Image 1 (cartoon, rainbow, N blue to C red):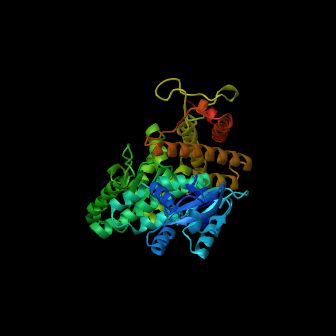
Image 2: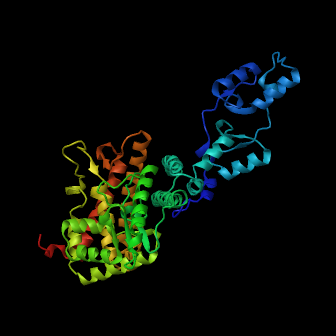
Image 3: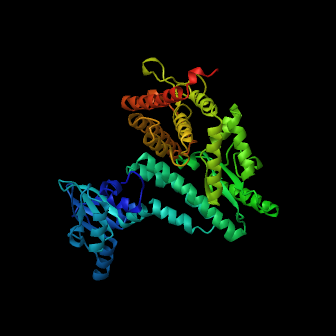
Length: 485
């Protein structure tokens, strides 16, 4: 499967063992057809595998039973499975690709295929229903469903299946970057479809001369499973005043619609519907100038949230204008980058002497470490700051690290360490979220190192060392030791 994307075609290169079910319900060749029918009814099956020892020798289907009844007039007598079973079996091996399974099922016009190991023993079974289930869990299928949804309520139902799709992609070996970008793709698709439905069903649309911005992790295109809405609005300076009610109606309805779909509001109210996050182009310029020229804690938090913005809907020229303005402001205010770096440095990795992982000493998360607050957050913020200095605004943290290496801001070796550290921390977060959501628990970002295998604990330690490597890069580049505390 591609390291950069998960296409529907990639699913046909999965192995048969990924999809086949087992153990398989079987019967012996000498079982009576009545016994066969009873067993099929008990297990809700339309076919039963006949085995001798561990090897399959035939299949009895409901059609075979129906034909037998029609032929004998219901006088089944002492008929045995071996007398009516289909003995010309079509099989595949566990490591065969699913496209082989599809080809053989189509060629032989069959609804089920047996999977046998190298010794000919029954390994599992794949049915056409299993293949249909695979198709409906593919990202492309789900995207098409989103695009064809006819109501917000229908979108909510589709959203509940994202967990299954991401979980399946993870089990099938999708890399972390692809999973993260896939989640963001789904969220973008939900938002754009909600916007289309608002216009088609309610007559609510974004007026010309405005743009809906997504911020934070969605702005970077690297979301995990349960993220809040973070958004803003910008409109042109010559935007007609009589269209402001229409703009506010769009923002308020979209925030509500996304909440209905299952994407919760930002607890801090960083939302397009909040007047504090809805301004004209000049208004945003003034606000950004203030945040950058006066790097107080609140200003740095606000800018950190806004920095990775992108226009998901509306006039893209407004996004570019704001990016140009941010870069110019940073160039004019030489102290901003060092002060922001010092702020980020406070989120360094919890590693003590000899690489010991420092855990929380009290509270409900005692004995654990927050891998977002003390790990991935510092990486995203630190990398975004370095990228800001050289005018790189868009892309994921991985993309920005690559750009920093290309421009000589970090060495190729350091870039590799930063990317690997970020990848592992994001993978840990995703796996923890998948487990929690599958068990109907609220996911969090806390990991207990003592519950990890020695190998995984060492990988976590290496990832946290990567965080501290970035802190060292920031400290040296911005001469943080010379800044007064």
